Length: 128
Image 1 (cartoon, one colour):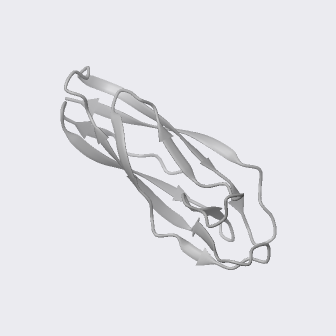
Image 2 (spheres, helix red, strand yellow):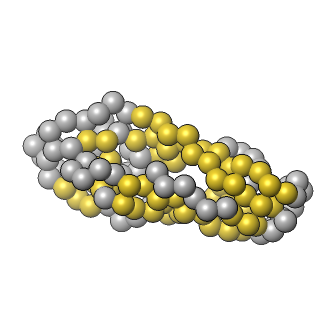
Image 3 (spheres, one colour):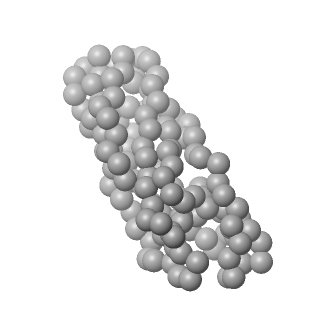
């Protein structure tokens, strides 16, 4: 995970924030909408404060064929961005704060999957 830059947002306004994921060569993670229910999806969740998280824009997944599945598997690989829309409430406290979240994933290659992990993520936000 590459660190996000400091965000600046006005109370009552919206802004988008990007996090960049970088996977080791040969590995992939299931997309946020895998084709089989038993596959562990990529999930991004955010704390409820100091900003309100809105829609999340995921990259376009790749459809790959693997021996364990008869249908293509929807995955992300390489380096990709996940963008979240945030809103600063009108009554938000002005000043510096941290927005925290969790990214849950399972990294796999064409032979095996590693145990699922959850990464803590955060970025600094300057609420004005």
